[in-house]
Image 1 (tube, rainbow over the protein chains, first blue to last red):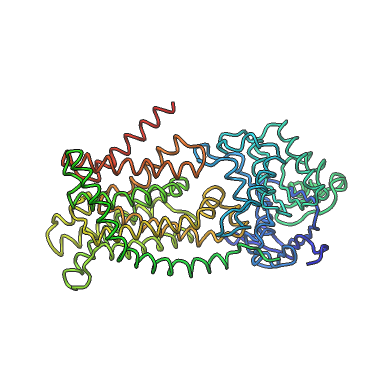
Image 2: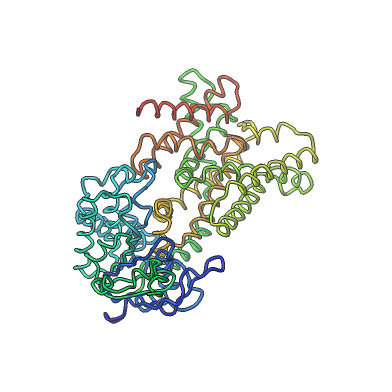
Length: 247
Length: 321
């Protein structure tokens, strides 16, 4: 596989749920190493598009390719990392330590075999990289939201993922921890990891990402953050379309 | 770039590994197990005499306690995954389908001579119910309360209907309902040992995947773990454990062995592995103390095991406050 294969190619993708189109005719390419922000109002289909891109959902029409392979049959699971929306609110009664969570990042590597020395080393390095080594034996549910999000990043690092998808990762996380968190993402971006970020805070998006995709069922704009701020795309996607049309 | 541990090679390992281990397990149970069993119990019997009790020489107690020791490992082990996936009631529902299986087995056994163990029929019925439940869960995206409740009461009603139609509601049926060590034959002990060993072996092999799915289902799917396969496996193992535990604990109380030791362990351990080990220790304590107490006081074995387990749980709750 050559290095200039796009990380993700979405082509004319439509996805319907209960006969209502949630995503319609979206075409979008994400290059390897790109940092993409996905924005749009609530219920705009951002999460659905993310899941389509990752092969967790199959499109009703169109094709999705992950690193050149059809997303639904892409089986190199260790290349993909995921931090979900609900990750910040883990159940405190779940008896799982931070290290155990980070270790799950190695499961796709070892399959049914036992963890080896390399696996253990990679896990410790990942914990160290995000600065939570001292929390490794604590229950994940007893950490603060920000610490927990770093643990999930560590899991992605442990799996040596080269594509990291985050779905509103900082919901319920305090402002200071957010800054630390987005700085960490910037570092990973500098390392060459492809990042897909769903974020409702447009300020964060403008400040950190390479490109913005503005979604509301359809793709409104796919460009660099500066251009997006100047265009009407945001207003259109967020529902001011009729007003813009009259004007 | 080919993933090292992709779903296909995992399936292959399971598809080849399970039948082979089953065959080995069968041979061990038929040859070595009776010898070890006799040797261990004659030693324990001698120790019992030295301590001035003939209890450990009682063959009923020997068979019951041996079965209990196996269940004390397998039950809490499976239970730790179930409880942390909010699936505790599935064990209860499968126990009731296993009871229906026993009822069918008793009736069929009275017609067909070679069906001499109703528990084998129970394994079959519970396994089919488990896979049915799994099918429903996949097509409705959840282990819904309502289908589980319907399965629970429906199979229980069916079991009672069959038993009362076939013959009077006798001691045998009562034993499967409330648990009794008096009905455990040596063939039962072998079957229970086999089921428990199978469960421990498969959990040992697939723990990482089961844990990943328990902690973060979506991320496990993304990592291309075959979530459906492992879900089906977990429910199937639950069915096996439940049947293994039914004779001692009774269909009504079986789920206790899946839930109570785990609840106690979760009070005390921070991690999942720690919880697993601790749950097994609590399970064993409940079984050993419970069987001894039931022997002394002449109460049903199942209820005394469950009450001991709950006492340990309450101590753990109070002790960690």
